[in-house]
Image 1: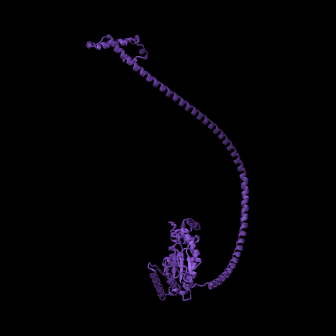
Image 2: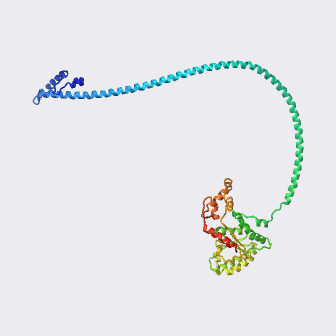
Image 3: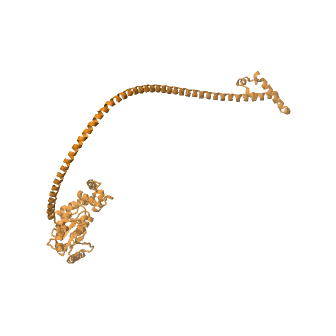
Length: 453
């Protein structure tokens, strides 16, 4: 199109009276003529020459406006290209400076390397001189070495003579030492044989009676950890007499033993272990009958114990649990039971009574002629806990732990109560405090009461 060549200046030449300047006049006239020719066939609605001119002028104004927008867009693109070009110039300028700096560094390194090469050449020259000097010295050293080799051969010859003399002297010494050692060995062997004979004469095999008195059995005291004092007390008062009786010796076996403490289950276990330790029959007597029924029942058990001893030669231990319930104070059974307890041992029976409340028993009933021993079974103290750890833990574990520390910790955590022996056995897996502090305080009072009886 011809109009595409019109510049922004041409647009400004169109005046406010819709008059076209000479620059666009030719093109303007041509468009008007062309427009009129197109509408000759419809001249009935054509409004005349002014309308055709106005239409052409309007179209040209629109084209000029579009060209102006296009020119503005191109100017923006040109400015963007100019900025990009400037950025490229800056980048390549920086890159060129960097490369120049690298080239300068490489030149400095090259100069340094050249200096190093010159230093190495000088060192090589010095080494060559030194090597030449060493070659001269080597001849002198070789001469010295030859002389030393000759001296060495002479010394080896003399050394061989000395070695031969030493070997002969050594053989003489070895022979003398062997003779003396054999003599000492014979003397020591003779003395050891004499000593062995003396020791053998001193060794005596303990008889069965003493072993049964003093050695704990696996199902007796050997199965109870700790409580050495209580075991020793029972052994002196009851155990030795029972064993003497078993072997036909004269012995004063007690009528009764009273075990008291806050752990009633352990009290009962201790009583059963007494019977097993000394090979006695064990009868656990427990009755819910009235006073007369309980008295009749205990008499029957005592009669059976006498008959059993005549058949087997074994004494019977009659375990009466919760003795304060079996013979409470001021009950009608207390009087007859006193008479019964005076002679129960004559039927080869011993009543072992257990209780948590010995203060609830009649003082005369439990006096020393009837219950020769009143043994306190306290909660496990430090020594007893330590013995329990030795027995109840795996021996392989014992070698890897500090038993003393564990015993002290177990003892220290009993702030609100004590542990029963049963709980102590399972302490590694489960710690269960099952004796109240009030019970422990009561037990301390009981000890003082029992000492006064």
